[in-house]
Amino acid sequence: MMLQRLSILNAYYALEISENRFHENITPVNSFRIIFNDYFNGSYKILEDRNYWNHGGAPWDFDDVTEIIE
Image 1 (cartoon, one colour):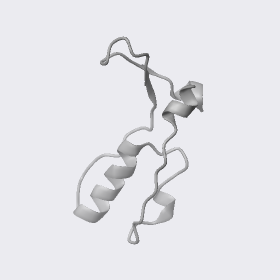
Image 2: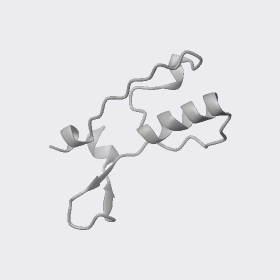
Image 3: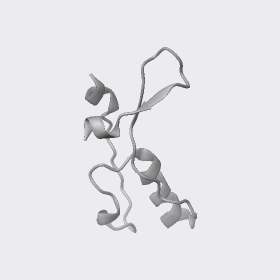
Image 4: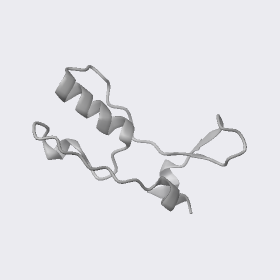
């Protein structure tokens, strides 16, 4: 169930950005940082790609599950 819930489709049409900037396990936070930096001259730092899971009890309580799903 966790893999299904964390699976998303990332599709980009970014002609001016090299394909090798987007790796297989990139998270949306970093893909948008790359786009904002390259297209809009942003200065967003690329973060470590991590995945978090919420069990539904408390909306602010997340567990880091990156090692479990990799």
